[in-house]
Image 1: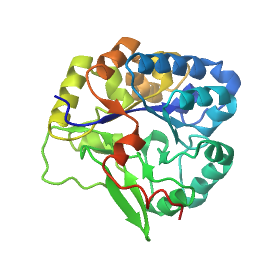
Image 2: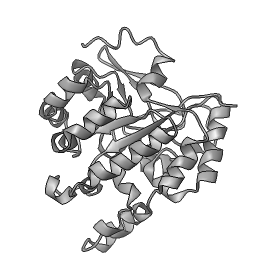
Image 3: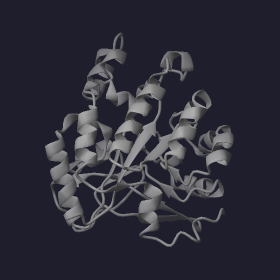
Image 4: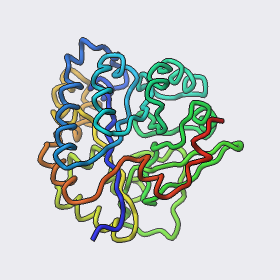
Length: 287
């Protein structure tokens, strides 16, 4: 019996985002992002799942027809910054929105996810609201439900990427940032991350998702298109330390594994998920 709606999301970015120091260039992508996203769309269609795509602005510039196709199929279009670089301060954050102005105007995205799932400052919330965004999904937590975050009279809903705690806490505090490393250090398995989807079997993932759903908690998951190939091919020539850190991501996520998860649980877009839990009338107004 299904007790909760889950959210399947895609961070729509090129393989260059795997590293911090490689420029985003279309000629380096060689059509891979468009091709692999097409594969993901086929899987979603097969299982009648509508997902949320967090789109990097550069990808919209490279493949505008791809984003149009995603939206046409009924998936949610959300925002993953313009250039997928670290958001070091308020000015940097604001510029990412300004550079993606055309994309934002066309698709009116309501959701945001920061690079590396690392939301750094609450001071960013008023900027998000001024651009019409109502939710963020840039922390890891096991809370399994939307939470409202307020800063100076501006509010957004935080939709954490799901972790599974092996040490039960009476109350989990959501802080900024709360990264993949923070989750692991708190004895939580980040089952919603693309990393865990590549490492864990569908049997284990499905078991943990079901446990959360039986508790009334939703599971929010994400993958990257480049994970359908694995990332081993882009580690060549890199420093040993960097290679070892990135090595787990070299394990590809197969289409069979994605199907094995989507077929066992109820998934929806994030915007549909939160609309069933919150009255969005106030949040949908720009501040």
